[in-house]
Length: 115
Length: 116
Image (cartoon, rainbow over all chains, first blue to last red; front, side, top):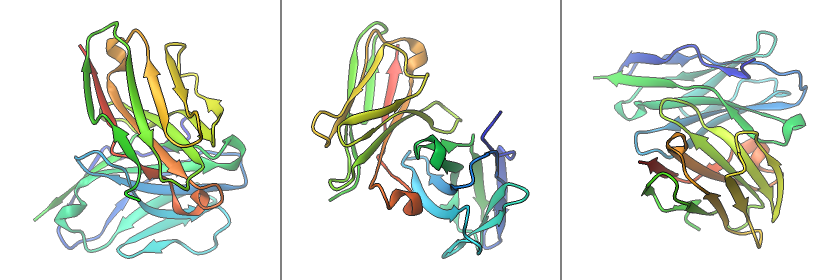
């Protein structure tokens, strides 16, 4: 079974609007962390935001926020006020304490911001 | 410290040749990870080190692949007898045990391997 599922292969958003990128996960571990990374065409993986399984509040980092719904096992990324530079591939990833702290990634969503 | 450095950035090799990639992590980071990413997919875990000890290897890491981190600093990933299916981006990441859990892992820019 897939550990991380990103169901949107591609998304378009108008500049200055908000966009939600979906992520669902599967784990039996009680202690885990969820990450979002951005990968521009240049290839580097840029850390955006982190949510711990025990965190009661949704994580926020500037224009990024994570909509964490633990019972539904979803961790959607919300980008507010989209900018042209947000066009990139976005990956959701999970780290499970039980499995050595390595990250497991989803297949990614490519986001295109239109002017 | 300029982050995680990977060399070379690009490598083209003929099938059957051996290749070696190098990763220099952030100096104080004690954990180092190798991932492989094929076109249009997310990175797949290959192996990781804590200091010089290799703690886990994925089943993706066939016997043609070997990784080392001899002094707990830089790491090398060697692929012997390369095959066309080895063509991918090889990413290295590092973290400091105790902080990686909260602040993510720092990735290098990757080595893109093309086997012809």
